[in-house]
Length: 361
Ligand SMILES: Cc1cc2nc3c(=O)[nH]c(=O)nc-3n(C[C@H](O)[C@H](O)[C@H](O)COP(=O)(O)OP(=O)(O)OC[C@H]3O[C@@H](n4cnc5c(N)ncnc54)[C@H](O)[C@@H]3O)c2cc1C
Image (cartoon, rainbow, N blue to C red; front, side, top):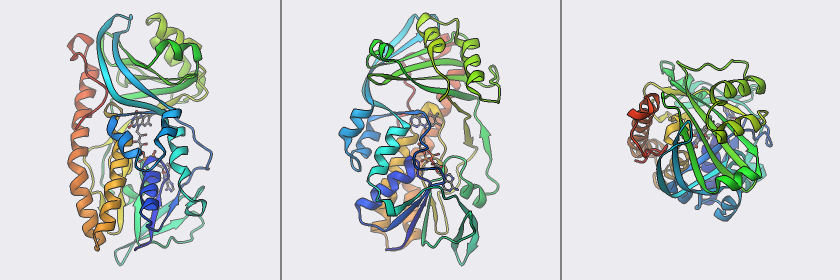
């Protein structure tokens, strides 16, 4: 089998490594961050995501580190219930927990941290990839899993257009046992009556909650310093007078680990492969937050690509089949995401009721 190099150890790169490991295919994974630098947010995973994960990890370990959501309750910003919906197998887990679990199965000699790789060009159809110290990577297949701002992708598809999405998010994970108990297994989402502003909260574990806000960037501005104080001030300015549950969470939160998600999308998807380079996860297809499909799509990419690499003798055929299989579904999520975005921007009384913040294919 060919020598596979995976660039980027987020969910997509790590899941790819897990599938290759499981199928005894040789690979090496390179990641620019430090091993323990696991800052970040949390993921909502639909049932399908859990099914793919259960093929490569001990699913009970995941269940211990996150929680299932039972009901979606939709409120206006003053706290009146607008609609309720039962949820089936929707799971929430912190990014750091999922990354840790996925990294566990990768032998230490197959993953190298603190290595940033750069594409220099192509020679005889093969990518020339260099490390920061200018040494050269030797691999037959390059799996680019370097995220939505993928440098490798931008180097190859120089004309691509990345557009700012009209919605951005603040995401925060805080310790609060009392609140976690109060929320139980519900996913609470509050919408401002004028549209373009929401606040969601869910329980991550018996002691932790995840909250996030979504805001229309044409109406609400956050100071670009992104310091904890700036984020706190932004939240107090726009959510401080919402119903008591929201305002008490905003006031009682630490902002040290709050994360700003500046959302971008590709105006048009690129091919998912070029010569011996293939893209998976966000590097192939950045998805906007409303879809809640980023992780599940990354897992499916890895699963399908691994199977095709095993089945097909010719790598190019494997890549073509991979793109043919994955692109239509991704295009559906992109379309659904844009519909959900348009609805979010409308005043609340013009939004459809009972719409889950998840794109289903
Ligand atoms: C705030 C926030 C909330 C989200 N919520 C959800 C959700 O609820 N549900 C959901 O399904 N999805 C969610 N997503 C999307 C989800 O995070 C991604 O779709 C998913 O994690 C797949 O990411 P990835 O592995 O492709 O890319 P990333 O997670 O971006 O990983 C890329 C990795 O590549 C490394 N890297 C980059 N460049 C290089 C290089 N040159 N050399 C070496 N390494 C490199 C980076 O350090 C990083 O570790 C959310 C995203 C954000 C930002």
